[in-house]
Every structure is written in structure tokens, then in C-alpha cells.
Image (cartoon, rainbow, N blue to C red; front, side, top):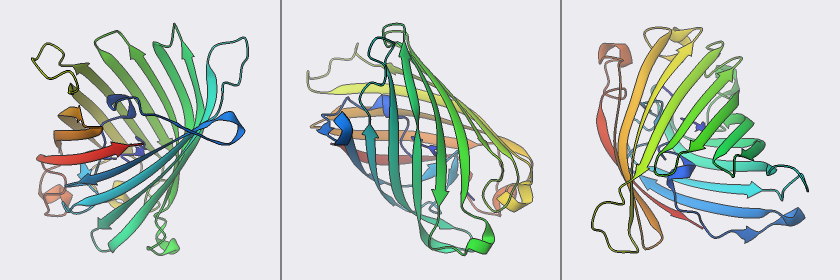
Length: 264
């Protein structure tokens, strides 16, 4: 079963490690003095919190972001942001479908932009699946990032009052660390970062969600190479859910995946 992860959790929140791992893209001028970004991804698997959302099949994803101009003239950098995300999915017993995520919130930068605090709301939509199943749900997200220089650290907390499949309350906690591998002898136009993340997912009604117990751990290790304006990700993800607890499938098992992202 399914947040993505994410996301976002999607967000940002999905198979992509985190927005901070991507090179800063050029932005298009948007309404009200804001800016747009867009991204397209081809991936060998769409993993949310360590569990495959595509039954280990490829995913094709598109995202669109909007950032408002600064809201405070004389205060710290504060702005509104909105994100739309779409991906193909395939859940056991439901068949292929589409996931559409709508996200919005506030972001605040402090300490010369080294500290970033975000508070937002995510809505997961599955138009191909029957509404009676309760598959569509929402999450509140708090995210705190700090850039120590070469090391970037991110903490994320998501809460849903009624998660996927009417599974009741859920809490999704995740920590992520990334570091540039600048010591390697690479061409000037090639950037390489390594990252690792560790998370815990808890849900009130695990049987509805499709997992054997109320909580499980998930983790991911990977590298992101930026070259020719593209982000190449190679990563390994896993959970502590065994084969039997994942419906006698490998959707929760350790596996490597690849993705290619273009950010505009």
C-alpha cells in the first residue's frame, strides 16, 4: 500500500529525495509578482515511505510549483507556496490509477536563510478509485531545514486525521541528511550529492492501511548527480516490514531504484 511519500509528502514531499537536493532552477515570472517552477521525472519505481506505489513498475511524474513574493517588507523572508504533483500508481486490488497531490503552505527563512521552517497542508487525490474506499485524504506537515554549510539537515513531521483507506490517524516522521561530494575530481559542470534518510510511520488502523502493525521504519540511501541540467538519482530503500507482512509481495523489501528529473 501507499506519500508521498509524500509528498509530500509528498512532497517532496515521492521517489524524489527532497527539493533541497536539486540544483536551484531558473524561475518563470508568475502572477502577483511570484514565480513558477516545473519538473518532470521518469523513475524505475515510485516509493512512498519505503513502500512501492507502483508495484515495482516505472513511474512518470510531473510537478508544478508556485512561490509568492515576500510577504514582509521589513521582516524575515516569508512567502506562500503551492505545489501540484501527478504520478501513475498501482495498488494491490485496485489496479492502475493516477495520484494527484495538491499542497500549499507558508515558508519562513531565518539566520541568513540557513534555517527554513515550513507549515503546509497536503491533499492526496485518486480520481480512478471509488470514493467509498476512502483513499483520498489530507495531511498537515511541519518541516524544518538547516544548512550547516557542506551538510544539509531536514526534519519532517506529517499528521493525518484519517489516512488512506479510512485507516484513522497517522504520523509520519522523517529525518534526512545530504552532503555534496565536492572532494571528488569531477568536471566543473557536474555536481554530486549523497543523502540518507530515516523515517517512522504510525497509523491507527494498520489493517485498513495494509501493513501488519501500527508502525514501521523505513530508510533510504542515495546519490544525486546533476549534469546537463538533469538530476540523476540512484538510491536504495528498505523497510522493516517482512515479505509476509507486505501481502506476500516484495513491495516493502529492500531495492535499488533510478530516476531522471528535469527542473525548469
